[in-house]
Length: 445
Image (cartoon, rainbow, N blue to C red; front, side, top):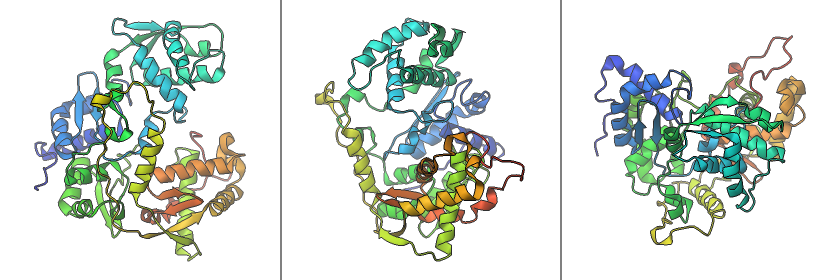
């Protein structure tokens, strides 16, 4: 099957601007006049027709573009836990289940007939619904509940779904009896919540996955959406497509990235750091820098011949099945329209091999993070992590797993092949001046 040519109707002289628009679309959950930052909408809209065509033909994605907002609707072949990182507080902390539930209930409480709503009215509308759900609830006297509402409203304001016209939500959260008035943008709210299928028709999260995509389309999606694709994680047909030069080079032409191949897999490298929602390595925060130093130390141990165990890695399909089972265990039993239900997900092929990967036990990881604390001093890790090295280790491991550099397993982690790319990462994380106490400056998240 011939590979559809990316950017086929884009003049070569405009290719850089088009690639910039592609990167913005793919790294933004929603683009409005204010989100992710002013000016982005104007860089994307001129290419709406070309973007719609390329994203549809290559990946089966749907681009919704108006003069006021742009949203990319993806089709998923597998579940990707890292996609949930778009739901975060202004401090960078991921939404917990309460905040995610409140977000759905608050958006659902907006009535099309109303163009504005006060905070007091909003609470009166969504509070009883929250209290009707076992295990959720809303009590304004509970500080954690009010804090969750503040975070959700801040998330909606950041994306332009709400705009504060009067009052202060912070005053309300402090219990001073304050109120706030918000203007509602119903079109943006509708763009935020667009499930691929009606949720009441689902009896399994697998029903949200695309089971009809061709092997070529699945391969393109993997290469585009994952930091690295390992041949051992996919079936033989998909691996054969990924090994073809035309597929990877076509996506490099679309995005402006660089194809990097190794015996274990393929990735689109981003030397300029323009196409990522999680820059790595970087100075942006404690977790980022700690993760970089941790993976560098692990790579050093491998190069030094340190005795580390090797175990057979389970196929990624097993992890997907486990994740689906855990999600489905929390699905409600009532309210499902069973005569229209989707319960069958796509076939999830097993990996091609049962390769052996380096296994680093948990106690070794704890030793490595403690060495970093000894080397730089606990004060270098900001107040959030000074007394919690194991908590910082957990956060760093989660980040490295999202980047597909390691894989968590009971008792430790497996080191994936791409981790060795970062054996000299310490050179990219310069030491601070001697009079600078805080090595990990920046956002302490």
